[in-house]
Length: 160
Image (cartoon, rainbow, N blue to C red; front, top):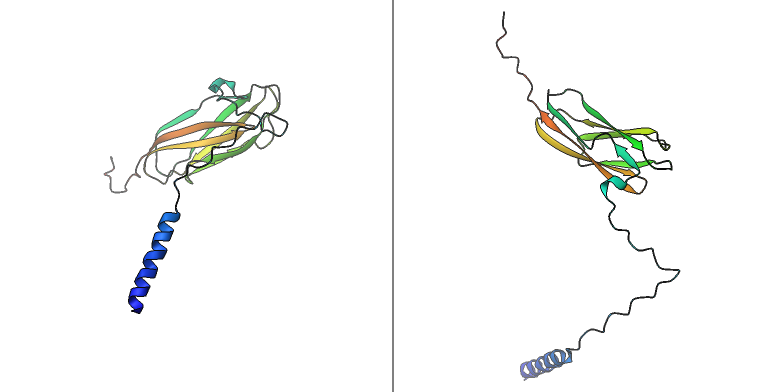
């Protein structure tokens, strides 16, 4: 008898829970807030590539084929083409095998600054690495590429 009462009670509560669900649609979203003093400024469209405050001498540097464990380093120079000083906030890299260094002081209008990339040449094979330069409110991507040749073995015959 207890089992029957338990089953009937379970069925009753299950049915009550099932029919308690409603199919009402969610309320409509609130209307957009009117433009006012507390509203953030609209998002600016993407700027064309030549609208930056700086102009780099090159954006991509190809090292070509370089020897294993050699000094693989290049310097990207830029000129401040704006009317105000610019400052590099940070330079990010696509992996830990590339070490950046850069001008820490603000660069005055018409003057030049630099970003240097050093690649770990103990990694054999082709590489393409990106440096992202955060300068004022811009992000500029620089790229280095090349191929690290395997080390020469000491078993090669020597000419006399």
